[in-house]
Image: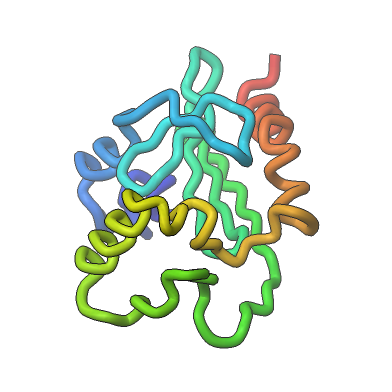
Length: 160
């Protein structure tokens, strides 16, 4: 709600409007996604769900299927909150890379992983898995209906 209100909360400017405007300026576009069949962009920690003449909708995505959608012009904020029981232990399945998890810095671990991949000993994309419910459950349903959700938000904010 703070971002939807241009950084103002209860009449007090908590975050500068300039920063909020910079946050919602399209930086990258044409980002391909394996799970969402829609052209999207990215700004400062916010995904651009729709940016056209009818609507500008941003979304923030969190761990385990938590989402916030925002159309600042129409003052609409929509959230999707999913109850999740996270797995015990590591939040990620590191596969063959588990033995370097927790060793030194992230930069070091990435260097080792890239080196092993260059030797074709591992495939990073196939080894590291995040605990999301892409195969079944709410996340799959959400991704399958992403365009429908965005279109519904546009229709609510800009009825014809």
